[in-house]
Amino acid sequence: METRLSDQEKHILLDLAHQSIVAAVHQDHPHRLDLDSLPNRLQQPGASFVTLTRSGLLRGCIGTLKHEIPLAQDVALRARAAATDDPRFPPLQIDEIEDTEIEISVLTTPQPLEYTSADELLTLLVPGLDGVTITHGLKRATFLPQVWEKVDGPEHFLSMLCQKAQLPADAWRRGQLEISTYRVESFHRSPPKRTAEE
Figure 1 (cartoon, rainbow, N blue to C red):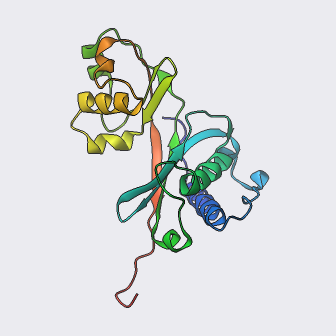
Figure 2: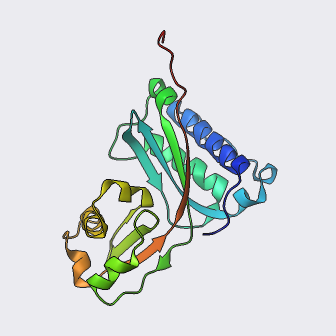
């Protein structure tokens, strides 16, 4: 695992994500980042996914696998996109912000996974820890490690991932996929608890 974030760095990223979401929902210009004022770790190139949920249901999730821009900037961009640009959902509304949970997943650099058979592939994956990306021609899809909580094991995980990439569910058995794995450090901010009077 690459260098872990400190509690302060996580707090800063969650604040940045929240500020970006509020600005996006109010259709304001993106918050200008003063990178020089941030911890060095957040100024380094990073890749992240920002996931939004309300009452336990997915409300938006956008991310990247590429470590190209400063991590703080990447998180701010993904948060804004998760709130307004996830094609699966309508844009987040102002009255939804307060009860939306923000989860940030910071990714390690993906590493190619070498395998010679479907059976070997099943033994190489680490359920609960590995994020997985599959590529076949122009088709590509990824699942964060959190998806393992919703599947019955590696076979189910890979079949669902193939379907996400618009490939046959058993495409992973044919040995034609390029596969890479990565790990994440994830942390979240829950919405404030409401009192009975509210």
